[in-house]
Image (cartoon, rainbow, N blue to C red; front, side, top):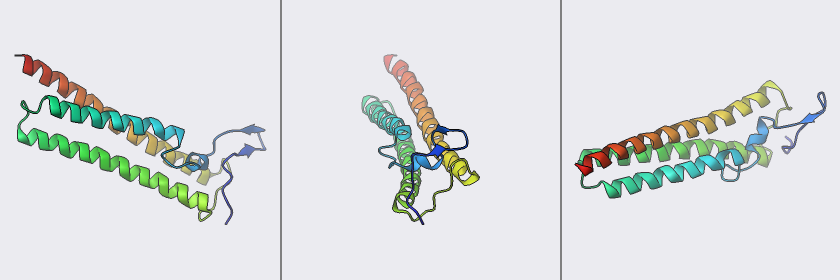
Length: 145
């Protein structure tokens, strides 16, 4: 097994670029494509806490429990996907996982995995934030009356 070289150079085209494996060259807490998702998670959780604090008196207990459970679900989904990214990163950086050649099918599969992790987090967090914003707007109009 050999150590991963994350800076690839495609000799056939003469161009350098990202290979699928390169998305796992950094830990998920340092990878540029993941930092935005971590920030979005923080925004979502802060918005959830702020909304629960502001509208605590308007929400029935079941709604509070449902929102808390949804927040926990988003957090556990984020944790699970970050663990997958971190596991692949550790295996590649330790040399325990053979690095496929650039542009190979296996390399493209790593790129697809990285894209799916990024998109799954982005979409789930964005949709949950939009739901919270809509719920907050409904609760605000309800509290005015």
